[in-house]
Image 1 (tube, rainbow, N blue to C red):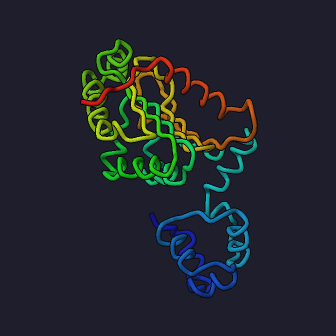
Image 2: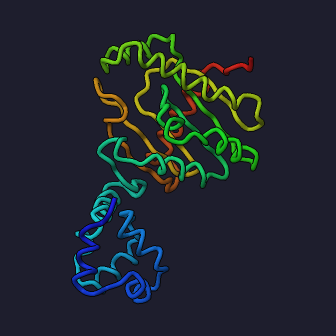
Length: 247
C-alpha cells in the first residue's frame, strides 16, 4: 500500500528517492519501500526524514503514534491492531523466521497461515533443523469447546472442519526432530504465536471470528510481565494437550 502523504510531500519539495536517502543516510531502496510499500522506518530515521521534508512525522507514519501510545501503556506492548485481518501474513512469517530458540503456536485452526504461505511447514522444518523448538497446539475438532465456539461465532461445523484441516497440514511435520504437534480441547481465550521473546496475541471476542478480533504484539521485558502471563498459559494448555501420533 503506497504512502501517498509521503509521495506528495516529496514531490512538492522536489525530493527524489536518492536525494532523500542521501540526506537521511539510508539506502535509496529503503525510501522506495516507504513510498511504494507503505513501510514505516525506525523512529529516529522517520524523525530525520520528516524534518528534511518539512512534514509532521506522525502524519507521514501514523503507526509511530500507535507505537508511542502502546509503550506508554506497557513497555512490553510493541503495537496494537484493530483486528487480525489488519496484519499481513508476512508479520507472522517474519516473526517465525527470526526465531532461534522457540516457536509456539496455540490456536484452534489458523489455517490462514498455510493458505497464504504454503511454505510454512518448510520454514518450521528449517527452524527445527537449526535447533529451534517448535510446538504446535491445534483444536480437537471433536471437543465440546471447539464445537461451542462454532456456535458462538455462527460458523457451525466450519470450525471443526478447519481444525481437521489444520491438523492435516501439520501432520507432515510429525517425526521431525524438534517439532511437536498436539491437539487440545480447552477454552481458547487467545490464539498465541510466539517466536523467542516476541508474541502475537489474537484476542477472542464472543461471537466474532478470530480474523475480526484485536491483536497485540508483545516483546518480553523482564520477568513477570504480560509476555510471561501468556507464555505460562501456553504451557498450561500444552501440558494438558494430546500428542498427535504418526500414521
